[in-house]
Image (cartoon, rainbow, N blue to C red; front, side):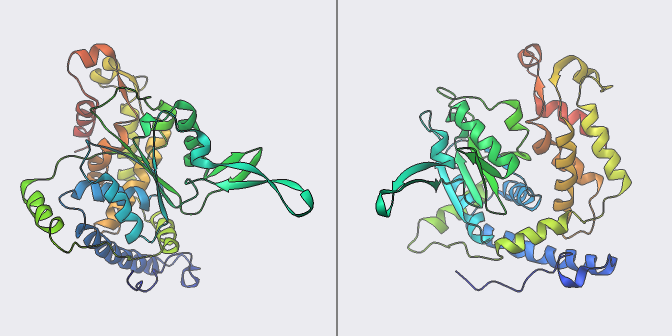
Length: 345
């Protein structure tokens, strides 16, 4: 692992005790430079998935979780491993199956006998006690196991035997789903889907990226990911993201977009007649954080309405559902979101 570069200065450091705008601007600019290096290091291992890498980084910078949806063989597992290495996070992987039990993820208590015959329970931690957890094919886990993971995602702690155990910080879940094979799966409930900050659709790479991948991954030597920052610095970056200023026009664009996606409050005919349920307030929060993170990732000091438009689909597509009649007519959630974002341009 390579030497870690100098620490990112953030508003939590001693130099940021005051609300000096110049200092915050300087910290954002330096963070933007570090993020450019992080993207470059990821790009040496992950080929042709620019949007996927961007959305994954935005999710982590926002302190959230992501649902990666794509067919097998598109480097989803490799992406999570690479993110863990580059960001200095302790990462673990769980292969979800129908017989996976909650204890297989969160851990369990075992009865041990010590010296003198005295017995006591000891908690053995499961793989959820990591900083970056990959839940592979999460929809193959039973609802009981999914609900156990839901508590960890929302509360950053788990409960075993009536005792709460806090999870390491930062804590992120990157879960995957196969969109083709649905036999023997358990669709995620709406409450759990809403806990994912983004749904990232992973597509096939273009021909140039696939050509580079063939050459780079089938030779004698292959590039390996190297660490760029530490977990503590990622936490500092997450706190800095929350201090990025947001203009009133961006706030209004977020509110207008999210509220227009709800059948009860929308003035769009397609939403009123075809959408069964729309995005809740958590979607607005996700968009606010994600637009800030995207601006910094692009080297800008504040988000714009264009960021809201660009992030509308990954943030909203898993927080809306169409009626059966709408799906039968060939309508899609992405199509409805496209109509919503057209009004923001």
